[in-house]
Amino acid sequence: MPDIIIVEDNKEIGNLLCDFLRKENYTVSLAETGRKALDLYAKYGAKLMVLDIMLPGEIDGFTVCSRIREDSNTHILIASAKTDKESKLKGLDLGADDYIEKPYDIDILLAKIRGIFRRKFSQEEITEGDLRLNCATKTLTRGDGKIDVTTKEFDLLKLLIENKGVTLKKAYIFSTIWGSDSDSEMQTLTVHIKWLREKIEKDPKNPSHILTVWGVGYRFE
Image (tube, rainbow, N blue to C red):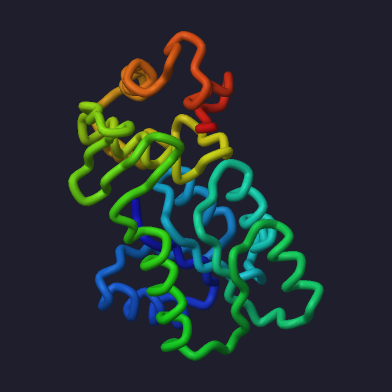
């Protein structure tokens, strides 16, 4: 999974921003159209999307934002020359987390991105009910007792909890945890969900936390 997808039709701006971000050790992908952005996201996912609004083709940035929000809480930062109040409100109403005007100061944008990653992805511990996930050691505990989980089980549970209340598509989960070029089969995801339920659910056959959304994927409640 790349850290960031830059959605920008101006190649010079897009490549410049990618260069700056890579120097700060982020993994970055660049999409010049809304269609490519959605294809990249469906295949690889991303922790953050820096999204232009005015894009060539039939899919603009508002549409990209709306579709990403259908099944993910990936952080969306709109960077657009559309500075009117209506555009800003529309972007935020569609689920964008922030809106920055073009032309922007590159140092300000980088500071915003660093802040996003510091707040959202540097947590050493995640607490959900009586479950505690230690992200540094990749260990799971309930109360004072440790629950033995594999690295993949831990990463899967963490992904589901970070997207609590959002139905994640099977393909997105699989590509995020195992990688789009993995030799594993999609059935691997089903098996890991079963194992996780056996470890954290009171009644694994009638789960109350890891729910199946038939024909789509899974949701954590």
